Length: 498
Ligand code: GLN
Figure 1 (cartoon, rainbow, N blue to C red):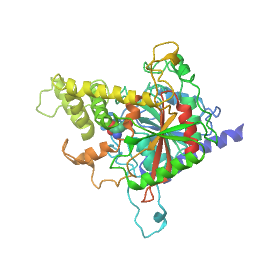
Figure 2 (figure 1 turned 90 degrees about the horizontal axis):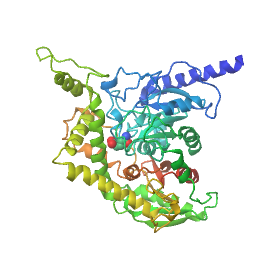
Figure 3 (figure 1 turned 180 degrees about the vertical axis):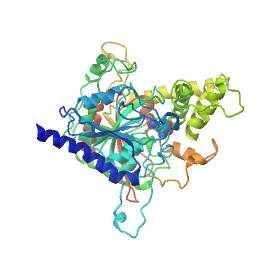
Figure 4 (figure 1 turned 120 degrees about the horizontal axis):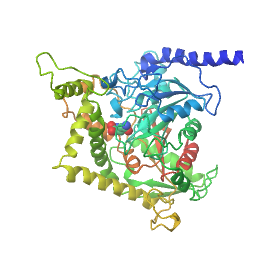
């Protein structure tokens, strides 16, 4: 027993040593855990897991990579952290991210950008200066920590693609589960109706092990899927996905190949599709006609929810407090509020709060917020039309098989590229130094999410698996998307694609 204890402790210090050596050039880990031996037993006892900095941990700060929360340590663990620890996993540190999860390149962080650790063959030549590319965002730290071997798996969050996009850029696996399967209790809210806890690892098998523990009903999360709903989603017979893929119907959505999609990605994607076809899967082209409106709808809805959620950072209750400057009226709390929020939030967060507040004003509400909600419904209906399995969240009858919902394609899963390109170069100067609302590069960053936001709006499970290299030798992922609750099927198909 003594030997075992020693070995376990050396495992804890092993990860600290790895992080000490590797993190300096990548900037993925922003806090490391003390040397607390875990339980040492349970299904995840062999895993070291890093946690995104917007998920609460009692033993380390939770800052959301924001100056606003720079000194904040939560008095409790998020439910998902407790579940992993109880299953024997060791939580080894917190990962860098875009501030409060807002961003696609992990450049909006008070700790500075995360550098993509992926190495191309040319990196081995000592005379070639290594390119500094983005690790993607907002969970860039989680993706980079996994890719660089600083942990076995990492928790991320995914509101519009923040698990899948960095996974694609860094060449790791990233799962956004069905909305409501993993508890959000203790996860700092960005846009509640979209926020999901995501999982990253180097392979689908590890992702699945973590998901099996994390996907547990939690009465503390009012948006958690109930046991009854979880059970209902298991009732549709699914094809047995084995080596021979006979019976598996894979849909290829035609709207997921926009003009901006890098041509080399299409070539690699075709190779995957023909390999699946050779193994017996049926490949069916499908149409999801509302896709082109999804990105705009996402940014209206997410910003509106941000403007409401982030109102709590007011300089009074907790977090940063910036007192009024000398000479200003100290009796006015509105002064404290304004100074705290101007200094505590970065440019991108301020921009979203302004956009969201505008979308919710009486003048703009109908044209922006309501319109975006209508688009969200259409996006969800598009998916429901192509999937063989019914959407159990939309069906209120007890016998869901008699649902009026009809699928015209009987698809089991959809397959599409996860991103329109490989990882972009990191900007030389901080994007936060540019003037608010003026930067067109902000729009470029938003466009990176074009292939990931539809599944977020519909709350569907989506898994990015690294399969192909773009023409520049950098990785891109392929996404497998399923009906709500079909996470197991999505993971199973991901294992075949891998
Ligand atoms: N890039 C998207 C945004 O900035 C998605 C972020 C996320 O999924 N957390 O809103």
